[in-house]
Image (cartoon, rainbow over all chains, first blue to last red; front, side, top):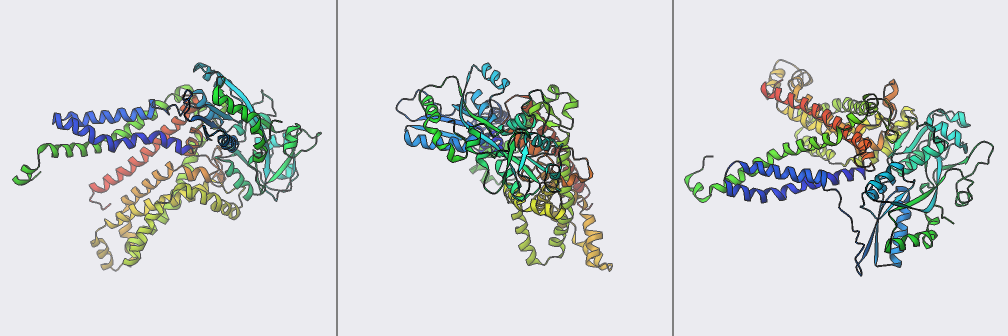
Length: 329
Length: 303
């Protein structure tokens, strides 16, 4: 996905070459008959390239707010955790309202928020709340982000199915992921090294896990993931490695856990009960690692976007459960 | 430029001039594009060298979310994977080239050559998936390491990807050795093996060096497969067992993080800074390859 992004930036420059060259060439060369032709052409190509590389960023997508009677479009980009849910909502809503077209893209919370800040998207999905610097960047662009909590998510701790460890406290998980605990024996398992799996550092799940599990929710803590942590580019990468490797421990949204990994029960501390993540335990607050999922709009939404968000917050909640997330009520 | 009078008459000057200029422009535009890309990279990447203290920038911790931009583990990670890949691919590649050019009967060569070219066409994401599902578990079980997502697994895949380049360039180099060298060796009573190993391969040495350099350039820039199998842990690969531990390469870092970075943030500049470093490294490697080609040409292709 990321490669695709890079390629998209570079490609226009390259693809203009065969089309532009003859056109410019015939004009300049035919009229002047002398040297400057190629130079001008190179300059032209240079401008084309420079333009496609720098200035000509993705245009405003189909944000046709004012188009009455025509198809109304909603651009929805962001969190990979939320993408399946957002797609399900979009499909259900488009069946109810054929005049609205919703396009949903993943890419990560940061991508969605950045796009919202740049004004190129209607709704940004995020699995974390906006950072202060993102909010100030939005302000600087004259945008006031508006936050909607649309569902809840629990982060499941997953291990290989043969791993005898089935209960961990949040502090034990923190020690494991900071590299203080390096052998399963130390937490009641077999004598095996622990292999840490995480999402990439720009994933909202990564930030949430770091702040609320590794740092135990302490804003002054400076703890970080161990440098030995494997950063996997996708949830699927984590799942694959956990299924194969009896040494591995990983974390991922409850919605992305298949039946093939073993989910560990988690306790806030040793005096409290160990709880497996489920819809019930997340809703009653007994499962310690859960979080809200957000949609952000640039300013108070109006018209069809407002209507869509209203639907998401009410009728849309029915499809949340089906996708492994936790509805608001 | 030696046309007969008839051709000149039927073909106006401006057509010829047009075609000539067009070709010239296309030729130069390649250089122009490289220069522009480098200028762009510098424009976006240079600020990082002023925004972040050198101690941080060349430190051992890469945690861009927390303003720690240590690129050293990434540079060393790329170097480790690339060098290991070449160490695997060089003997295999040269041996294959020798077999195809010197030993194999004609019909075998006709089959092998296109097959080797097919190798080059396999998309790297497919190889990466193959590596993740098959190579990584095998590496973990056979070597008894904690995880199969290691520098070594990455090096195996990269070696595989560099092989077609190394084989075809090395084969060309062997091809350039005059037949008289072989005849002379055999006439002196050397066996075929002695002729190959002591005469033909040394004569093609500079071409083989070029092959290795080009393979290296291919390996260091490879992204997708590496990202999928090396584990991407930003640790310093300094301990002896580093080869069998996860590493994070420069390319994988750029690919994994560029999609979600805020424009013109320090992190954004840091990623382009890595791009600049990568560009310079690749450029130096290719320059070394070009120099050896140049040398070879100067000495009549026989060094």
